[in-house]
Image 1: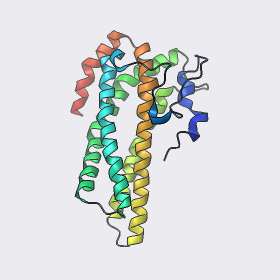
Image 2 (image 1 turned 180 degrees about the horizontal axis):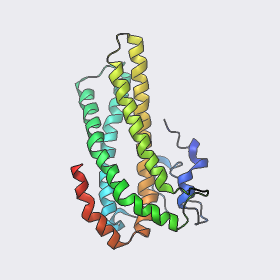
Image 3 (image 1 turned 30 degrees about the vertical axis):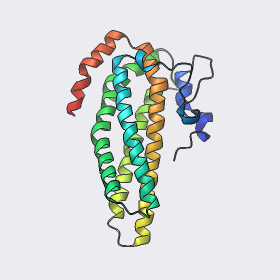
Length: 225
């Protein structure tokens, strides 16, 4: 599971997007208790462009699914890896949501929002140094890959566990799968925090209304995927 407090001293996302400000900003790797909003760059939902509001609305649906899934994981572990009908239903619903809604959400970010914002961050020199400069967008795309990896490992370990005849081996495998689930939950929470409190405000600042309107015209077309 990601240790947010331990990672606070080396938060590359914070360094990239705040490189030129000279101000100590709140790091998404060191959020205050209960993920209180930062006071510097955060923008109220009502002041975000409707495209960004759509992404935030989708985040709210994801957070609701994560809450139910996390409670089910805890119950599954507490029950000695025995799933009742409610746990089975919640697991199935979560995997379906991730396979459908989350995939579409990430696709819209990667195809509509990220390319233009990546360009603007590089233009504003808000990137790492070196021969191949990287911005916060590179890190968010890496998050997407890690999310997929955690999800795949969790699903595969669960599928393997139910086929193991040995009780001890089955328990160990379920435990590994569950830890992947908790890691997935923490990564998604951190990813959402970064986007809503650092990346989306940057997008609201650097992307023009006309550019957002072009995104809006394409937004719903990605629902077919």
